[in-house]
Length: 101
Figure (tube, rainbow, N blue to C red):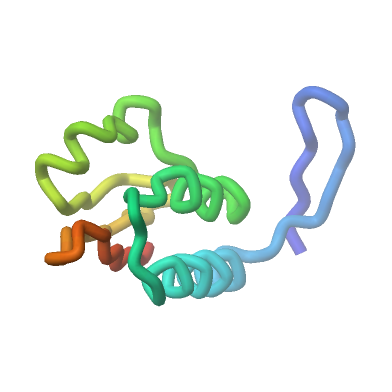
């Protein structure tokens, strides 16, 4: 199993492989999509990515751009991409469909 050394504290931890991290991430993104949201859950999406070793660049998380485009195809590292769509329902709530390839 690969390891990761924290640059701040020097602690070495085991890192799950890419397949495991993608499965966990996509399961979390799927669960986010099971409900409608009053606001698009950007923080939950970003946290799910971060928790599984991926990240949005600061330039990628421009909330206004995401709302205007209503979809994103964004590099999250390791050659993987987040694809997400945001649909505003008649009730004013948001449907979110997201996955990482």
